[in-house]
Image 1 (tube, one colour):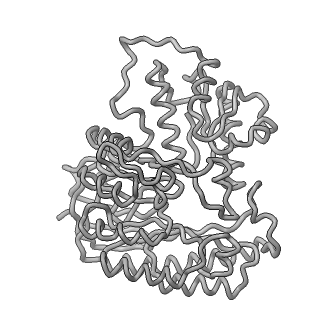
Image 2: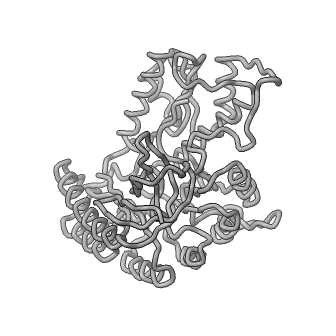
Image 3: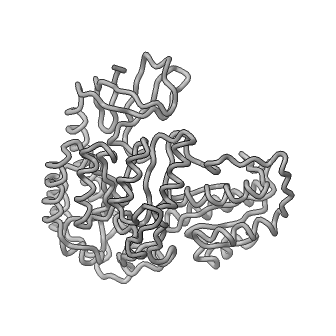
Length: 427
């Protein structure tokens, strides 16, 4: 299995592998030992499409028998046009079609005496943390995004099913649950926040229930609806990590309108202030797009000014690019690449300066951290509550780590800060 793209795609890969393992299939760590290769693709940006095509080509060269699934699978002609030798192409979260394709390519020969499936299923993330997908699809119609076209409208999982999966994960040793979806705040809207088996399908209720399991709970892809403020007291109480991943995308109302997103940046600043008043330790992560069609220098400066006021802890930024099928492609006043690059550089320079200042303020503080890795020199790579795996910073412990294990949660005193990372000593 070659899994590309976001954590939501990783969860899809885990589900496919779990089903295949339950049917008696083995999982090869390399091309040479595999009878076939599944490539789970990403198709969100043209650069992601190119990466997916490259991965398919590599699998064809190294193995020759390739099944393609995932977001780019929604464009089968695009894939077969570049790689006509693929065995099958299926779209996102079409698990049954993937299984059917595998059955045709490699007929199963299960052996009940040797085919053992762990109770938690097959996971591609480290043992101590796991992504927990609560819904699929999205009801928004942002002009730059083709996710709703590929994955459809919002479909929420029943709350009791999410909790049951989370309980199994925690029982198997998971210390951190990373809640993901296309729109976490909208969880349950499509099923009218139905309650079943004692659990209600609303993000506030779900967060509270997950927080009772004893693991860290981290919320990703939280759209800034008003009811998000109801999550903040749960963070102040310690039930949920004081961390919100909210894709603001921009700050100027005109740019946001052209994106077909809510244009209320000033009120968003008020919301952020209210969140911090309730939970002063809250860490805010967001992503932004610069160089969107029609973005003027004044609009971009508004974004910089907003970022300076918001003082977000973790920030990612993308240069706008046209994506096949996106409505933003037809917008006038497309910006040249050099303007996008210049604005991206200025944005990231400000974001880095904010990060440096905020991390420096943590020197001397004590932080709970989770251990992600310990290298051969005994250096432990950890994360604070303010850091999600792979996208945020790390905290490093250089000495005294002999008794630590991956997945441990320990207290550290911060003694050094860099641009995006921290260093500390065990307390």
